[in-house]
Each structure stands twice: as structure tokens, then as C-alpha cells.
View 1 (cartoon, rainbow, N blue to C red):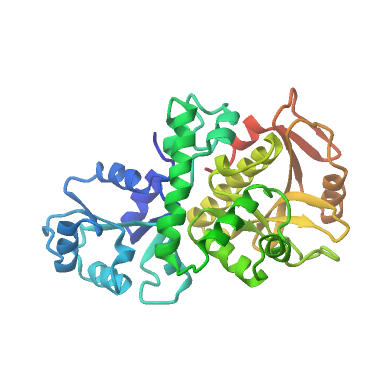
View 2: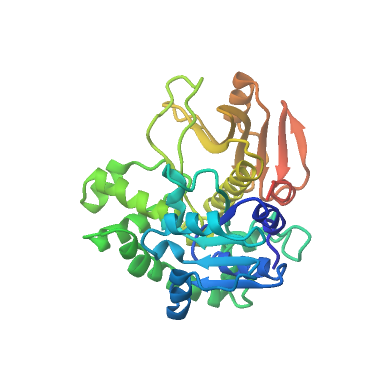
Length: 373
């Protein structure tokens, strides 16, 4: 299954190091090897492999190599200085591609010697936009039930998708979390994760979860930060500029794997839309350098709009999701008029698209296919 980012990555490799980051098992290694087919003498090196590790440390690949792919390089002590040295001394014909997940992504937050030497591409699960012009482009229910990770999405038997998810969650908790950061009470972290699975689409109170589990609110916050760093969940914060009396702290939590959501079809649908919009904003930011963010709006009076896209600090679009109700949300109309920005209500089960009160009512099948990626 092709990935839309391939062609842009090939272009970026001509200029700088390219990092492919994202959740585990989302297809980073597959994409890297697919990109390698465009080169005549590529070399794939995985730091977990003993022989590859020796080649990496000794830089003993052939000088004719035209593409170096480093996988799991973040496990190497001092990897950032290492890759800087390789990049600064390599022949002009050699391109460098690095893949990884949680620890690798943290390099973006640190001002170090890699500054100005790399482009980042975040690879996220399949979306309706990415799979447009395929047999799956209109199968929104598949995205909701299976999630967009390649293996469960593409497998023939839904039971195999459930088996994959069970082992995926167990592996993340037992291996990745413990490898990423010391967690003394793994059971409490598992309980936080389970509660989050049931609260998709709602604002999340650290204090409320702490009370339910019997731990401190700061511990809940720390656990959620770990889950974010490992690409298990992503957090949306409320937009506050120009919104009087808005709630400043409580986020909404969504999952990179929609299949992890425990809720009705409305919750699954909202999570799938949230992930599609996140992929859209991240993709535009990384591709064009346009700072786009995904947030939501909620006032203390509990007037809420599910999503808003922020471009360079200002709202560019309001988005509400409805599973079956085509009646336009009064709150969406009010915020659209007050803020003077366009708004869209996305409906899963919609017979006819239309426009009322300057609000577009769109079918999920058509709206999601039109997103950037």
C-alpha cells in the first residue's frame, strides 16, 4: 500500500537528513525500504542487529552507497552527534534516512548540533485521504473499527485485527513504556490507559482520574505524557484567544489507534475524525512550513465545538462531528458568527450535502478524502 509522503521524502533527501517518526508498527521501516527501491546502492542498518551495529559504529559501509537507512539509531549513545558527523563528512551522492519512534521524536525539542540539517516526516496511520483512489476510500466503518495501522486494517479477518491489538497494547506497556521511562506502578498506568479509552471526546480531568484510581493528579499527568511520547494518545488543548471565560487546562484525549476506543459509534467516529484532522495539520506543517494546530473550543458554560484548526495563531476553520444527526449545531452557528470563520459539520450518515447559515454540512466520506493527507 503506497504512502503519500514517499515522493516528498525523496525530494527532501536531496537536501538534508530525513527523519521518519511515528508510532510503532505504523509502517516506518516498510516505507524506508520502499524508498530504497529508488536508489541503486542503498544500505539498511538496524541498530538492534549485532552485525549492523558493528557497521554503524565503524562506519564501514561502501563509499558507493547512495542511501543510508538507519533504523532504531536512537538506542545508540550519542546518536545525534554521530549522525551529524556522518552527514557532515559523507560524499555528496550519499543520502541519509533515519527512522524511529518515541525517543527519536524528542530530538525536535532540543536545540543541538542537528539544527538546520534535517527534515521531519511524521508517519501516522492510514486515513481516508491517504487511501483515496483505493478500494478502501469509502469504507469509513473499517477505519473506525480496525483503526489505520496497516496490519489490522489490511488483514482479512477482523478477529486477527483484535489479536494484533491485544499484543500491540501488551507490548507497548510491557516493553516500550518500561524502556522509555521508569514507571514504579505499572498497574496504575494501565488503569489510566483504560479510563482514557472510555473517555474519548470528553474533557479529561487529571484530578478526576486520580480520584478514581487512587493516585496523585501529577502522576496522572506524567502517565499521559508518557502515553503521548509513545504515540499511544494525542492531546488536544482548548483554543482560548478571543474566547471569553474558556477553560484553560482540561484537554481532550484521542488515540492514534481508533480501534482502541471503548465507546459507541459516535466516539469511534469522533476519534477517527480527530486523527484525520491531526494528520492533515501535521502534514501541512511539515510539508509547507505553515504552522497549523488542532484544538477544540469549550466554555465554562459547556458550549463546545469539537475541533478548530489554528493557522498562525488564528482559527481558520471550525469543525463539528455528528454520527447521524444532520441538524446543524446551534453552538457551531454561534461560534462561526461570533468569530467570523467558516465552519463545517461532518456527518457519518448523511444523504445529501448542503449549506445553511454559512455552515457546510458534509458527508464524512467526501470531507475526509479532501484533507491534505
